Image 1 (tube, rainbow, N blue to C red):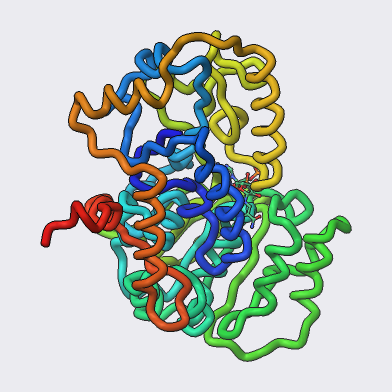
Image 2 (cartoon, rainbow, N blue to C red):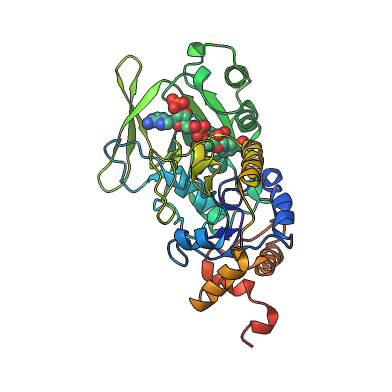
Amino acid sequence: MLEKLPVPFGLIRYGVAPDHQSTKAVTRVLDRVLSRDQVSFFGNVEVGRDVRLSELMSLYDAIVLATGAACDRRLGIPGEDLPGVIGSGSFVGWYNGHPHAPAPNVRDVQSAVIIGNGNVAIDVARILAKGPEELAASDAGGQVAAWLAAQPLQTIHVVGRRGAVEAKFTDHELAELGTLQRARPVVNGPASLTGDTAVVRTLRGFAESASRDTPVTINFHFNLTPTAFVGDSKLREAQFRSAGGETVSLPAQLAVTCIGYESLPCCSAEPANGVFANEDGKVDERLYVVGWAKRGPSGTIPTNRVEAQQLAQRIAQETHRTERSGGEGLRKLLEKRNVRWVDYEGWQRINAAELARADAGRCRQKFCSPDEMLDAALSPQLRPA
Ligand code: NAP
């Protein structure tokens, strides 16, 4: 298993919200797989930089692209590059400590607009809405908690371009917003809630429940299509077109677009329309693809697990024993190129160090730079005195 960062677990480590530790706990299952003798982990190895895809093809009998969808989709509307407008991949990566995701370049956020009606929009709304004590047991870093606590946030708008009945949130994630300490959900125009899905019933429940006084409100709006972000040197408001054609403006200093993701190229393999073209997981002879890189950014961890099992069976049927040298050959190639990779034992040392350095109450304090990770991966014998 090759990974460009020194640490494994991709979207579970950097996409699943830091306050959803029970979901992140699936890493224990994956860690058991990594610990097997037949499995070699090569962290800090980037395909295209340290080794070419064609070289891997000559070393291994089958290659699987499981590179996900790491690039934010864009709305393609005016003002999208204004400071204060951020894609969810960047924002979620930042609050999860991803080394390549910078902190939001805005301050004094009183009003935030979240565009999209999927579970990522709910995650972003919940993390913004939570007070410091509600994040205490998470693995959100100190700098994340400090940025969140510094914002005088009062209003969060969650905006869908279609009706509530078409929203893609799952009911369970939506309902969690009704349990927050310092924020409460509010439905804009509850009379317009039509249909009878679990999501619509939960939204009606929000609208009907006795109003609590909270410092933050999470306002749901439906049937508003984003048309522009407006501001001079930074975001001032987000503009939408209603179903009736009117312009609706929502003041905001922060806008997070939660509208899905696209795959990035993997060395010589190029995605088209956000995914790698494939026939039921097969890209080419001995080259396969799974997960979001295969079918786009949809489905939860169990969806991907089922799909991975099916692909593994297909590869087992289609692969014939050859003399390719596999991990042994890759190790030699990386050594020849002076690539410093992290193996499973190195990852275990990083993991142990992150657990040990967590503040009281926090479950983990991630290293946020590859250099810190590489340092923590060193065995005690190799550590400078
Ligand atoms: P998603 O569920 O596909 O939602 C994307 C949202 O963006 C939809 O409401 C979509 O509206 C909207 N959208 C797309 N293009 C737009 C545009 N040009 N203008 C306005 N709105 C636009 O994607 P996601 O929220 O990124 O989640 C990705 C996957 O991860 C999903 O399968 C999700 O369930 C999963 N996930 C699960 C959890 C969890 O289980 N706790 C947490 C996070 C993510 P339309 O419907 O109109 O296209």
